[in-house]
Length: 283
Image (cartoon, rainbow, N blue to C red):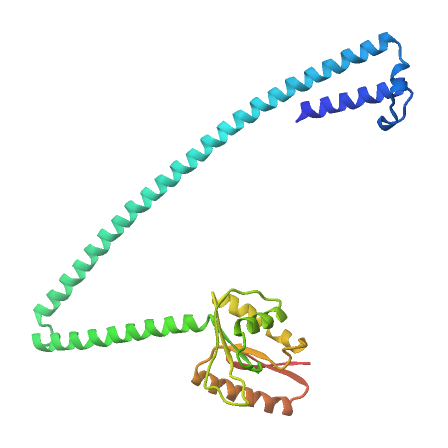
């Protein structure tokens, strides 16, 4: 890079020198008549200097080409090293997984042997009592685990949903477009997996809209910006809330009713619901 800068500066100096001798202020003012003015010796010297500069530029270009080729070779070598390291890492992880599987299998075998020994010794109970108690506890634990897993999965799925209330329901509406317009008022463009009206259709009533997104974080962003709908022209009467169960909706309604009472009794404070509880701050 220093060689390029030096040659560029030398070229600019040469051009300025030539323009001064031709008595021309700028390159765009140069004309054929001005170039005929210098004597033959001057023109010869300038030609020789220009040839040398072209030669120097050619040598520099060749040098840069060779250096670039060498850098490409080094880059290819580095990339191959990365690939080799990745292969080694995958191989290492495979070995670790195999070792872990062996350890788990040995542990399970040891636990089974321990249980079998405990049953056979009949400590503090007969063999039948131990077997009956073990089977009873086993079934109870399995049921609890199954119920816990089912509850966790349902909770995770529900966290990816939110509800839209108060949006007028039109015949043959395009529900996808309706949801997209509401999201636009929130300055949000989430990836909507599914959206549909829920509940039984009744004349004169608008059913809420259930919307499913790709993640609970995306739902949190929508809920955080839901307050922007109060400034919307077309969705001012629309509001957004979490996807709650029937029991959760009942509990939330109790909180809302209690908060309204607090707003009347304590008008000097702001009251809001957060984390399943009513919070208040001074205005």
